[in-house]
Length: 446
Ligand code: GLN
Image (tube, rainbow, N blue to C red; front, side, top):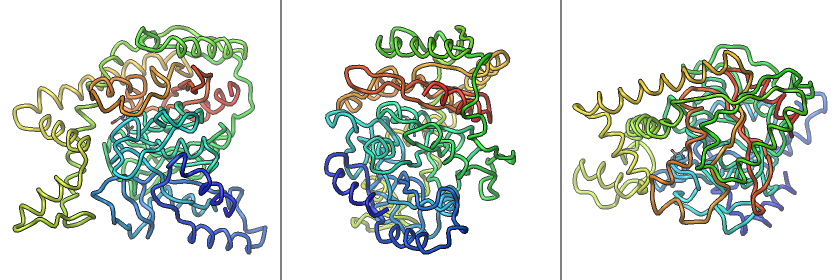
């Protein structure tokens, strides 16, 4: 833990991954572990980890990268964080992200711009950009991210690490600052597949405090690691391999197909005809849920309150106007619009119907296949500023990750090559609660 902080301090001026370091607390925990009898130690005891700053940590500043929460010290920890602590992992601090997890480049953070670990002129991806860059730069061996529409997988892909978005319900969302409650999931980001499975072991399981968390038993996610994948059936959706995907990335997926075939899997082209509507559906559903979830930031209960107030309405209006950044405001306006009387049927209800079509597309493929394979992102890490110019173009970049959230499926990014020195991520999508098989295939591929 101590040498971890030394290395973090050496590299932070280049990477800017952390919003808050919890050195004193971490060193105290490490000392306690050092002084415990060996027989009391869990296998992961003393391993450092970083936490995305939208996951609440008791008495440690938690901002969701927003001015709105610049001074928010939670009075409790998220279930995932409590579970990590009881597994003996030591939290080193809180990692930068897009404000309230809205974005794909970590540039909407109120605090700082995190740099890609491979090339500091490029974005780290997002919204879990700090979580990805920190692991890739070697500051921490693992981190937690959250994925609402690709926010674990895309930054993992941009930084050449392993990122898992578990099945919806696998990991408790209690203490994850809600963005879009029907899509959000916490998941691990690590350098290797096996590390990833071990962290998922630590954070999974039913939680009475999250009514959407699953009651299924949690398997040991390392169970199938090392077993061969002969006979595994993999589908590559043709919609994921179109012109919009950079040729180097399509080539990397083709190479991955060859590797899987050489390992004994059979790979076929499949179709997800409605996945192309994923982004449109997502921006209605995610923004609608966000507009409702973010109502709690009223200048009274949490964080920032405007100085400039003379009546109650000013408290709300001025605190929210000054506390939220422009991307967050855009989502609140979009969501409020789609939920309004007169527009609800045309937008929110319709989006729900198309979401069902997307769910059914995946169901059909999983009747005959074990896994789906494709790219994570149509491009590798891009320049700073590129996402800000034109929101619609930026939103479309998430077209390969968003359908997975809409269907509640598990999806992961594993490193699968380079384009001009920048990492390419390969996406594996599993059936509901089939993470074990994804780790088996990813480990064989790694
Ligand atoms: N980039 C997407 C968005 O801006 C997804 C973010 C996420 O998964 N949290 O909403």
